[in-house]
Image (cartoon, one colour):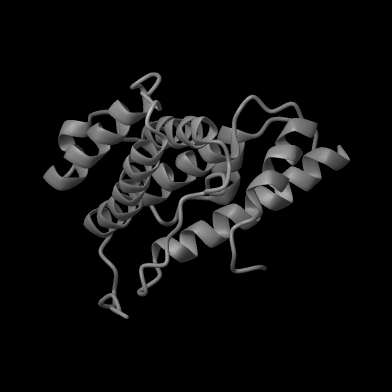
Length: 185
């Protein structure tokens, strides 16, 4: 199995071929939400949350293969002592509005993933995880963002994405501590 996340555009095209009504970013959010709660999350349980279709269909098989790669690599990255976790989002060169929409989809997926993993009351999460998860929900439901100043918007988006990336690692560590200390390069 490849140790890199699948190509985002390839994933979006594959999802389109099976007429999925969920984006790759949202699917990754669901994956991350479920895995921060339980690293032993069953891949098939996660797949049933994000993909419906006939296993005999060629396009379904294609997207399922990409999703399995996404799941395996995401779990590896979340437990990487080098903190190599990445969000599954469109490339920086994509339209800013599309990037913001994908980020919000990711946040909505993450909140769904927490619920699918059994988190019904965020008040029961450790304090830092609860505050961060509440921020994720707010970002996911914030509606349209003001994108008038493109450079300022790009910088703000980069900061939010880093906040989300680091937050996943923090919550993963708080919910299920790593066995080895992180390596700082």
